[in-house]
Image (cartoon, rainbow, N blue to C red; front, side, top):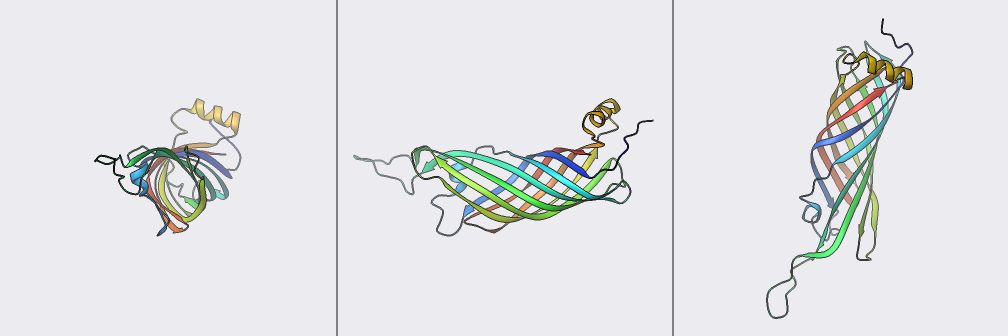
Length: 214
């Protein structure tokens, strides 16, 4: 019989945003140009890694977890003039300058998670917690690097699809090599609501990923 003895108290994995609606904007008076006009039109995926400590785990009652989730977002674009500049002799220069910009943000979330395990293969879950977002904008014209942090609040609902039964040889290899007792495909809907900061981040979208419990 296929057995993997031992208690489960930890999980880790990765997530990738599939379909995202995102807004990044400066506080009143601090934004020279609309973020989308500078960085919009470019696909901006988000990758995230997470670790979960489970003080309570039951295959019947579900599990409670304390989750640390760290993501990274990257955008690039070109700076825009505040207004069109006239050319000598008539006409105007392009509104886009030759200055290239890069924008990084690193959201870190500490959250409480509950996963309902009774259905076995499909295990719905919910997560809620505060988020701190560090950000940095650099430019290639020697101008200053801008950086700071903002605060938000994240909620997430989703489902973990148990994958152990698909290939028991792979499941045994994960257990014997890394003590992994379950692994899942995860799908979730996540929403980030801005709370404070000179740059305000809001986010909602669907993510997919993998989770490994051990």
